[in-house]
Length: 408
Image (cartoon, rainbow, N blue to C red; front, side, top):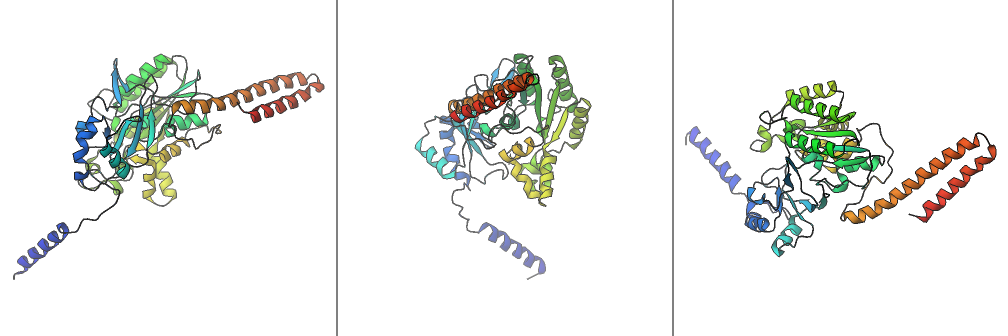
């Protein structure tokens, strides 16, 4: 046998060995499309939405998280959804399929069993009557911070209590954080919603936090360039007399750790790298007097501290969206730091009404403490003229201690 024929024979033997392998059984994981494809019609009939999925037929009017309101695309009002990842290694390895459906949906038995067998931990996704994602703890204040952007700001893949507005709200009870995020929105849709909200809350907006995702760079779309986007934000804040803007730049995983994410044959292989656009955006943001935060830099700084690029992954729920841990890491970079006034580990908001009752008690305690401080200031002023009034301060503190012990 010639050397060429021998080499060809060896090559075919290797190819045959590769395709003749016995499949590895992985319990609790969808490893073959035949496990989910027959269920797609049932998912459509039940108005169940799929994210990170190659099945466009599941994106129906009934399963969409957004709707058109006047000129703007906005999240649907009064959503009460359950969201969870499907344990599957189909399609894109870094972007597993996520499923969402109304919390009170009556699921067909076959789907309920499938979700029980292959679904991950579920979280709550709710919106209010204006289509704003629920921010917890619930607070109404005349001083507001508007948090805007696409899915990353909306927090599709995290619980109501773990979105960026909720984590910032938990540290700051003096202002109300409003979530204006829109799932899968373009820069034009984001700015449309933000403009409408600044008009709605005119005179109340202290600050804007703008999530600028990497895929907001879209040269063929309006506001899809750094120049257009920053110019529009500058014009808006000047018109509305808003004095503080924080822009959070969110690159994809493909451009933070390309050595671990750009797999041949998958989405990461040809994902664009808008490094030049990013540098221009940063320059324009700083020139405008805005604060700049780069989630890629934050994630890599923590990874270097652990001497492992793999540590970056803990910050992401998928290549384009932050995880709850990633949001917590981002919050640490908001300054000045604020002493937490509520527990930093908030419960999952399975029922917004129950959460409102719980937070009402916290607000009542906060008001009592504020009132006591006002009384102490007044007593201190009087005590400066009359030392006998100093005992009033002790009386006020004893009363406050008794009231807090008695509860709301």
